[in-house]
Image (cartoon, rainbow, N blue to C red; front, side):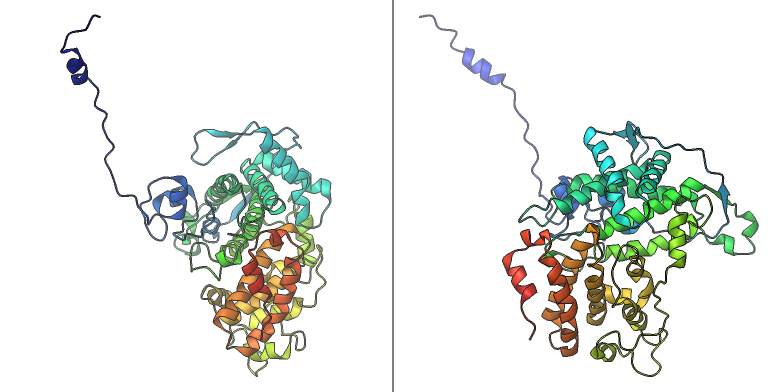
Length: 464
């Protein structure tokens, strides 16, 4: 039997390739929730890391954070306009039934190619979802949705994301506190929110120099077309509604006020609604060429509640007036931080909730006052009781996008108040009315498939 040279084995061994080992490194356990989910290195900057800031995501270091939530509250971080806005004639637009093949994306390079599933989501939004936002003729709603989106393609991202959000409310996964397709929805909402803000920034003068006589002459007028105004309002309304509907978690233990404080996520829907005032002024929906002039006419004739109105004396339980000190002589908006919110509740508490009268409920963020909003962020028990009463009223509105927020956040407030403020007897007694109303809606919702039994037991436990 022939053998090779005795040194052949050693020669082959000496020529073997040495594989370089990766240098070991210590993994950061302190990065934000989004960077951990995406598997990228986090610079751990506070309050928001650089990756989340550049991607337009809501940065949080909480372990209970939702997956890739858009930073809704940054959309309206603009100063109100000060320069004159010049109206341009609207371009000639026709109703287009063929969707574009691709959509613009943030960054200016490349595009998002529409898939068949995306087109199905747009169709569902136009023919179904948009009809859940109030009155108006169905055909008119569909036509203006398509007309505005074909002129301003970033709206299609909102339509797709919103249709996915509706799917997540309908197709609740038993035992799962979060939607299964949250990352896909967040991507579309991120592109739409970022491009919306870019558009708003380009169209509005941000400086206040125009208000100074010495610089007024140097301030140039901004030009904004009719469709741009309408598209801005459409985008603002849809993004604010999406922020309200997109609950961080369906488990009340993982939402405000039961979770640990998180400035980036707590009450983001309340901050988002504040920004709509800027767009409302710029959009000027009452102009003759606005596609929303019928909506504006309805708002102009609606008898909306005002926090400046007198408090109705017998609309709320007697203990309510005593707890908030609004029955005392001299109580007014200027002297009592709760006065405006109590006045608002006294005007809507007995309303029959209908689609036509829904605007009376939706003005809550504008009427409660900045003082109550600050108290809510500080978890003031009286301010949270006011919010619980509003949630218990709003949950009656016949639309899917209010249900989860009202039930989850409302009952989380009730649990928090009982845990932390059981010694406030009048407050706990007054809490029973909204708590029972929210529990009734909980049992009619799909949340019964999600909440663990121990959470249901705590929510239902009788108050002593």
